[in-house]
Image 1 (cartoon, rainbow, N blue to C red):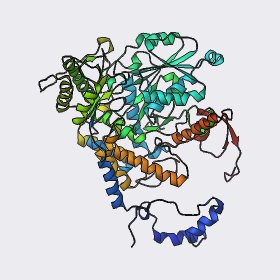
Image 2: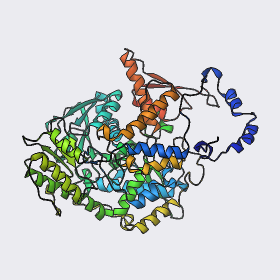
Image 3: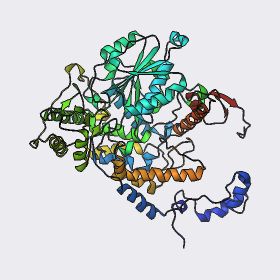
Image 4: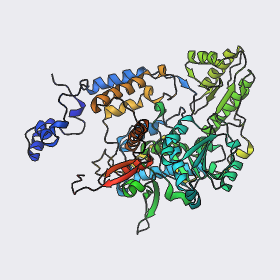
Length: 626
């Protein structure tokens, strides 16, 4: 019985097309083609031991079944991920629209004017909120953006520092642990040493070339870093700041207190949690460092008739040109998620973003006072959305956890017994009363239900933002759904995507993924799960990851699999780091040369250098043979 498989329909080549194609090539069957092109000694003798392919209907039921195993609790864990509200007009017309989700890095500007405008909007949002003169059009994720900041500051050392081998990077102990972990992985092979400590206790020495700090920090405290930055600059040190983008609607932006680089995540700008990703990282810096910045910058040009057009203004580290001299292996960006974040800012505008931030901060301020009356001691003198408490003697973290889980709520539990939570855009009065009940039941007290939360602020006057942002016309025109939808469609019509035709450029595009593969992404069971929830709340994700890993092991023949962000460069880097770690483990860490064909993709030598290897380029003939 013949089944209707996706493989027979997806790309558009039907079984009936095969005879003509085979005749043109000059073979009688696909088997003959494979026999003539792939040497027999490297071919599998038996078919792969994989389950039979599913029909689209079977897959839809299977993936929905996995999603239903994920439990959607209300998560206040924070630590870099926050629940958000994706405006329906953006979810429907961008996220679920192949004209946008297949749009790749726009090499051909003349057929990419719509997405280039959308990405320029994103850059403007970042530049405005951080108060930095220049932003790129996104990086892969916040943690790799942190590592990129470290590498960039290492490259910016003065000639004297380079001569002396100055190589210590100071990282404040209160940054998100996942960011510190990736910084450590990425910078050590490049010859940097990491010093982790309390920024208040740091004594600058000639060995330190740069510092990374977080604003607000991982505990939620808003620190006044102005004096620290002055001291750093006096000691010839650069400073990179990991900043919560939404908090900058209310907080004094790092660009106004001397930061050299500001980076972070734009997940808070309407991007779902997705169990930790993907979401677009942002990266902003001073104008004088533009040629050292990773990624791409979109800019404006005028043609000879004075007409404005968008273009890729700078690809400062384009690996395909610089190859082993490239100081970053980033060859792409989170274009879809960056586009969505930019549209989120267009839809809300300055007042809308400010109101969201004020509502979050007002709820946190109110809860801070309410829980103090119950005997909880809050650590953060100045905060935006995150509170961290020491507990009364008769309340344990385990007691709080049990009560919270019984009400399907995840709080943040610190190693020392403290408990905290991060308020987000989705938090409303019902949620506030539920949080209040959890803490009051644990304290064995009663609290009256709250019916209104007044606007309030706990921010120090010196750390409040006074400058405006998103003043450009585009952020003030499209605040109704109808206007927003028309604007999105107007940009869409200026583009050619894979929904229109084949695009010959770009080796790592998102491809025209099948609709049945994309539909599950809009299922709340996949969208609304925080990456740090207990594993029993993410059984669907765990099974998905495990199933894929097992299948990849069968396909590749390897014993273990690691799954990477959606960039080939990240997977390539990981493979090279694994090889390096293996060689070091058997006492052969001195083996540091890598042979790379001249025909290889540009990220190959760039990734190798990032891993601390020396590359040796091998010549190729006209056909690319080594």
